[in-house]
Length: 225
Image 1 (cartoon, one colour):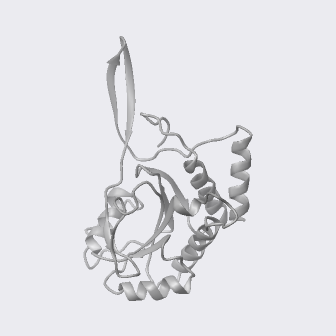
Image 2: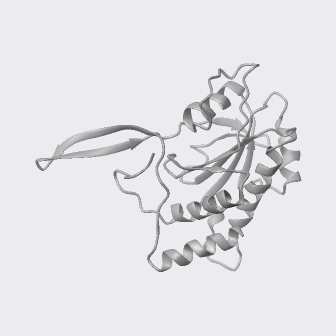
Image 3: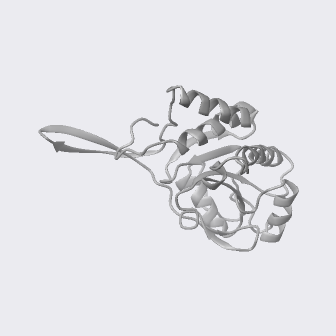
């Protein structure tokens, strides 16, 4: 279904019909006079960097090592008996949709990176993440499973991606368990939130990834929440 979704997106774009994903998390509206007219410019939150260890034991940076890439991010833990296996299976479907095709000169696997961050880093070592990634057939180059400092992870989830509104300090009693997947564009602005348990939401995510690969940036993005 997801590869078909991507085909339909490209088909619609080729006919001149397109709609770009919205911008989320507005920070402010700037106003200035230009040519005697008051011009407003909406500024959206740019997600800060996060450094964690991936399933291969390598310390990586989301913004430096993945500069210029679109990101799809979710949160999970390896011993989760409920929603996490479903989330990971749906992320696997997305990965399969953007796998390199040797028959094509260009491939979307070079512009999108899938990111799964553990919310139980004390237990989820990079070795445990490697075993989990292999269990779900992850491509280690294009799908990272990340572990590290709990406080940094929880601050990133709350303050940068805003996947939960509940209070917390990343301490021993703090716990985030969400089904939301987040789409970040190349400028690290949130462009979509998706229910990672629903096929229809995953179809929309796949659509939006393709749209973002074709987006031409403007100095001041319009529209959003």
